[in-house]
Length: 113
Length: 112
Image (cartoon, each protein chain N blue to C red):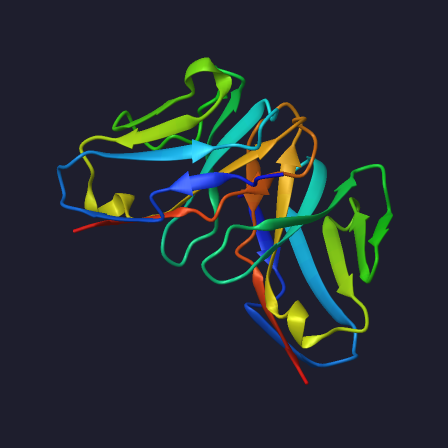
């Protein structure tokens, strides 16, 4: 089966610009998660979708971040306007059940300059 | 404060030996704990999940223990191989909470 796909793999944008990251989960996985790893820190949870509904977005850093999952398939994470501290690797993961291991994508490395 | 600590940033062992990685946590009540492997430039790969009522789980050369009294999980790789070299992450899933809390990881190097 195809894994979790994220694109772009890399993005370099200027402060103040907008960037949209996309995640295609494994087909049939209702649960979709976004995480972020900033330089030198551990991976941190951002939010969790069950199908198209946001189950928990307690990890979203502020209202410059907007995640959507229209139709319960792929998801997008938009950062608008981007700030320097938003630089890091953004991971998406999916799972069939909420209490099972998650399959991660390779991540999007975002650099804000 | 809440913390997840993995024993060391880096661990070097000789091929064929058993690697033991530690994950300690404070001020958490996890429903279960997971171990992931991460290679450079890739996302974490799920290895094992152990629930709070389980003491031990095995999968091929991997073994995980979970002691909720000590608030510690041990991750063992027996008969280690150079291909086992990677960063290993522990992650806690909390009750009534959707987020997973990750440790910073331990970078394992298995020398031939």
